Amino acid sequence: KAGVTQTPRYLIKTRGQQVTLSCSPISGHRSVSWYQQTPGQGLQFLFEYFSETQRNKGNFPGRFSGRQFSNSRSEMNVSTLELGDSALYLCASSSGGGDTQYFGPGTRLTVL
Amino acid sequence: DAKTTQPPSMDCAEGRAANLPCNHSTISGNEYVYWYRQIHSQGPQYIIHGLKNNETNEMASLIITEDRKSSTLILPHATLRDTAVYYCIVYPGNTPLVFGKGTRLSVIA
Image (cartoon, rainbow over all chains, first blue to last red; front, side, top):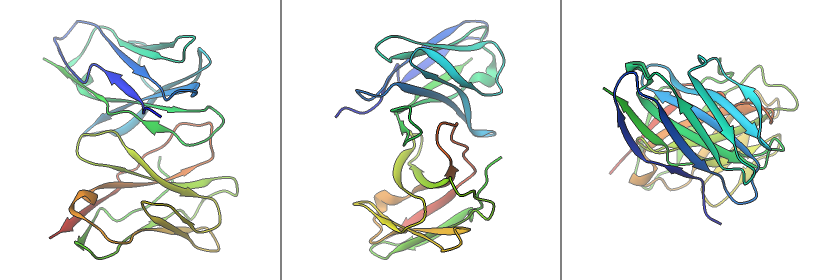
């Protein structure tokens, strides 16, 4: 079974721009969670989508948003990028029944 | 905040067993103990999880104390490729994973 895939793997943007990251979960998984990892704050939860609905949300500003499609693929969007948004963005998928989350390789975003 | 306490770093000789401890004294009855590891700048990799009983899979063994207040992840024959940050997480399911700082394991040749 193929694992979680994320595209693109690397991205460079400038302040003020917006960016969209994509995540394809493991086949059959209906839950996708997004996390941000920075050296200073570690791994922090952004939000979770299950069956196209946001089920949980972390403590991030409204510039961070996401959505999930009917095929369970998910996208997250960050608008008006700031230097501090430079991070590794990770998505994880699970069946949604409270079981194991499996992570993708991440998207490394650099904001200049 | 993370509900677990782990040593910040450990060393292990290649070929020897690596024993990584984790304290979770406030764990609730319905919370599982999960272990993930993250090799430099890659996504966290699931290793193993357990509720009460000891568990073993092809990667590692998980020993949970009878009172469930602590656990140990055992890598039976550590290799250089096991060098990573190991995270112990208490997880009830259907909630976000809460990562602490983990233990940085260095396997030395």
